Image (cartoon, rainbow, N blue to C red):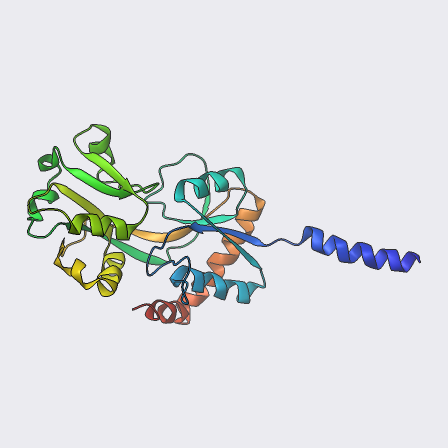
Length: 245
């Protein structure tokens, strides 16, 4: 009988202390890096899946708005979320992954509007920045704070682009968005190609994973960075990105 109880204890103990990697991702699409519900889940999901197979770590996904995921990470309710050190303006310390892929931000304005009018911050007085809830736009944050710019928030990039598409010529509404995201939606909605898009980027940032600043976060950050480096070295990362081009 004693052996029987020991076996039961070991079984329940292993289940009790089993640790899954709790990953918070946006509840809205961020193509081609992340999709909430589609056959292909995005570059980030494919990389995390490969990491799971490599390390044996099971992954639990939680889809929540950006601001909520930041609070969940701060409280330790999740282990990691999608972010970039260049975008992050929150408080506290975190562990960070290596850069996964470079995000190139471009200016997007309505049809027939001159992009040159939006490249000089001094000329933007009275302009309107169309942004995503919870997103940070480093180059323009101070102008919004100083009320040089007004900001309108949307729940998705597609809503932003469609709103711009409906604007009249010479509108002072604009957005800053990843070139990859804009290109993805133009493929799906060809009419959006009429929008004016800057050839030169207005900012770059590495897409990263942001880990909680505790023992779990430190452990997973190291394991993921070791894996990511090997994925870069053997060409695996390039192959994953190519699936979405």
